[in-house]
Image (cartoon, rainbow, N blue to C red; front, top):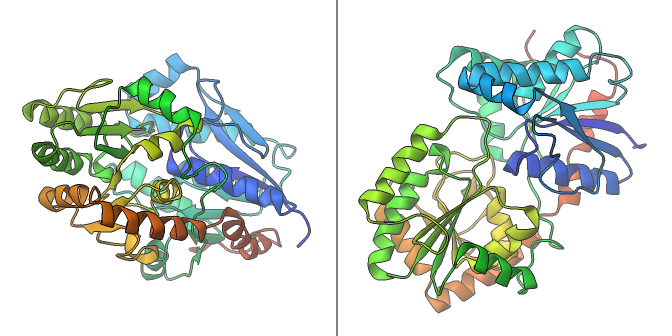
Length: 398
């Protein structure tokens, strides 16, 4: 296939799994000879959370004060504003000079659906990372439209591909995920000591949770399990990394903080619980290496990219005993837990500290991570891109 110009749309410049996927996918596509340009609304003007070896476009968005006002009015207002940001950006034929348009969320998907109806673009591909359960009918309709209007659908796991087949009656290509083994490595680095000192990480053991305080990530279950682990290991620390999100998780975060307080667990650098907020990309490998285990017993995931990243850094992972984890991991690769059972999660945290178990998980995890390349992921997109680059076709649902 000759080189394509591909516009990839994501919802944010922040370090979220879907955004990381877009940047790494675009880099791999560029290495294959295509021009993949990642777009995202950028209300802060700070740009993407990491430098990228691919073209990027930070779409002009509302200034921080205006964006905060929209957020105060609710998620619907904020999402509508971000869709409108994209529509302003792609308002001219010159801005739409791409062979393929590829949305990774409902914001970009809705903008592209509108551009299609305005005849500015012929159609678009849509990656469904996961389906959110929105109580607000407007958000639910936007999510549905972003999928229904796409010409081709892709998923990062078979789980969501099956959902699309059963719910929409169409097949989605499963493209998977990858991990950059040049960035995520198991060998110690100078950054390790810097990160350890910054967050006051002691002798441990250190349990790492990625994704902030979020219901979908089951942070409350992790907190309950960690409180139990502290009874066995009084110097254990829980690091809650990340948390940048377009959605409002303030109520859930307050619930988790109340649970920590009730358990007598203090929060802060050097404390029992360390809340980092978004972590610079260059420091994430160090944080993985410093952790004794990644706790990722999520209720719902598209794939769980941070699991591969942790494994590539030699860190054992515990995950939920359910898809998508059971698709690409075996009991030799990770510790499977019941996400509803804090005792089960705590037992897995403790098991990851046993030397023989750690050695087994480390060896198997390194092998598993090495099997997931971004090049392979990029190649699995090409058939869908070829279809979208051809003459316009009818959407999935008329």
